[in-house]
Image 1 (cartoon, rainbow, N blue to C red):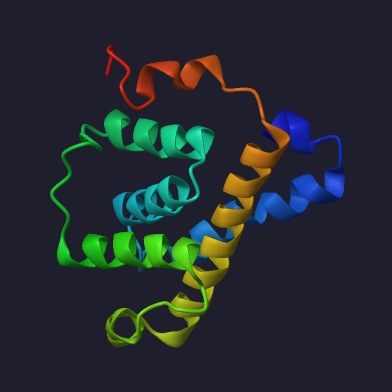
Image 2 (spheres, rainbow, N blue to C red):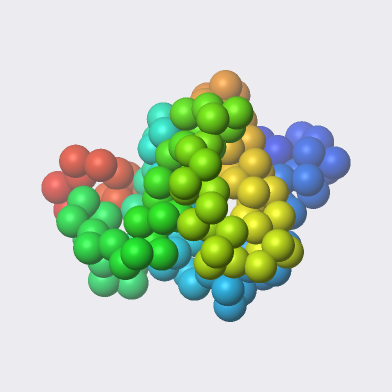
Length: 146
């Protein structure tokens, strides 16, 4: 994806803000929580590259993405990521209320902006049909070597 984006340095710079927002969310949102959130967005957007990228992150830290036991916070972020992709105009009020009770306003702003970049990344990979990185093959859903 980065190689493709580098055809436009401006586009690459904008998508790279994912890392800036990730840093802003730390430590309010842990690595595992952000991977679960990103994985939920990726799955809902049906982005094989993004799904597999976050599967690799989880697997590399010893977690099985097909059998995760989610904490309350992780389940909340998973549901939020899925809801954003399903219909950003209809995120359930109860879900948003739980997020507002858990996070301060700045974290919520960063979390929604992060989700926007994550969704944009999934859309970019899907539309442009970015080549699947061979490094990710072993981590793809249904791969036998994971």
